[in-house]
Amino acid sequence: MKKKNLFLNSGNKGMWFTVDAIFALLLVLVVIMLSYNHLNYSNMPNAAITLDVNDQFIVMDKLNELDSLDIVAIKAELKDKYEYKIEINCESSGLINDSSAIPETKFIFSNEIPFYANENCRLRYWSWLK
Image 1 (cartoon, rainbow, N blue to C red):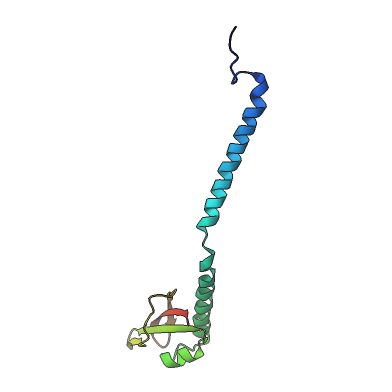
Image 2 (cartoon, helix red, strand yellow; image 1 turned 120 degrees about the vertical axis):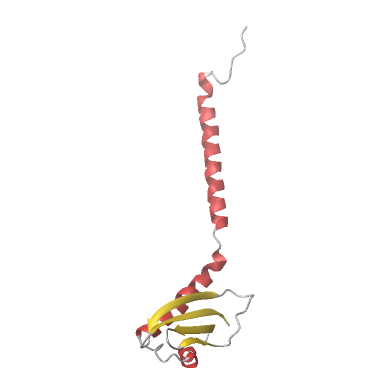
């Protein structure tokens, strides 16, 4: 008498379909879990800092408050919950720099904004939470 082969038996098609579906579901769950772990939600507040600080300087540029080229006056207009280091580099005035030190242990956001204050200038800033 011949032994029956389980793979060719028509009564086992449903079992193999179920095993295949469970394997596919586990594979999808592993991919979702790895994707979820890849997202680092602890950096979300840093994104808010980035947008908030960048918006402050853009508004100051639109209101021509950067035209004074006075770093002390510019810092006085900024929000108190952040600390800043600011450099202004103009074509004829040269580099205007404050002496603030940038901390090494905090999230630092930096950007550079071109603006016009009777000459072409660039404002470069670094910001971090107090």
